[in-house]
Image (cartoon, rainbow, N blue to C red; front, side, top):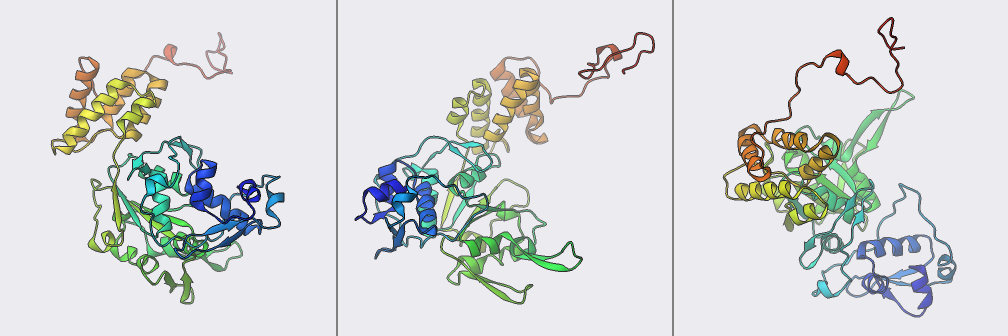
Length: 382
């Protein structure tokens, strides 16, 4: 990034300009550009459309000579976001279709969204401050997509026990015995201009979610009533994305929640990706068949990518028969017979049942731990 700017000292370049030159995604280029600005190794200015421009300064050439990596946990507010989406997004940037490594080390394989790689589409929606709700069955990759798109992500795992304190913060006891106020992820995301994922948002009480709304609307701030009534304002880059699993018991998408997410994206399993990942084609065929039955309302469950990857790992450790039995066993009880029938037809076995724990093995059949020896006289390990 520094080298590109240094080679064109008279030019002001936008994120799109640099993304096309470097062949990287908008998100990666944006992060690198803002890092240079934060270190005073490049200059930033705005345009009439609100799109930031970057230009070399006296320190840029030196920065191009040495790669410097920020330590983990270093986050600064992002630059001013764009105010409008580009009218021709597909032509504005190279398509990034290769795997993206998430913060935890796992690879994410981008999918198409509005003629763009999904990670790029989400970054553009973030730049335009358009909140996104991702919905679909558990295990389809909603969280993985958000983690791949936003390296600065903070996550709230929602459930029926989530409280306002889990979002905003609460007093906790310090080692000294006193109490200190510990800010929650919502406050941190606001103050640092970071992305915030409310996972399983529809499992959270509407009264709790109401604490989030002032940060998402025109106010762009919240009041921390529990901490002296402190006002926290959103720094540029603050962004909220949520996940919703419609089929999960207790998930309720209220009008108040739905209305705050201008873009709602359905996420299903990419079975072609499952095949590309070398998952047993017969099992992928079973999953496709069951998914069609779910769409028709004939069934309530079908294996998603998460279950298919679990099948692959189980098969590698315990063998095909055990992995098939486990696939049947993890299905909801009411759908288990249908799943078993589909497996039997696809694989050609006569019978399949949930993975059972069998009868006790004789002592002679039990594998001894590595390194143990058995005394011929006393019959015990030593």
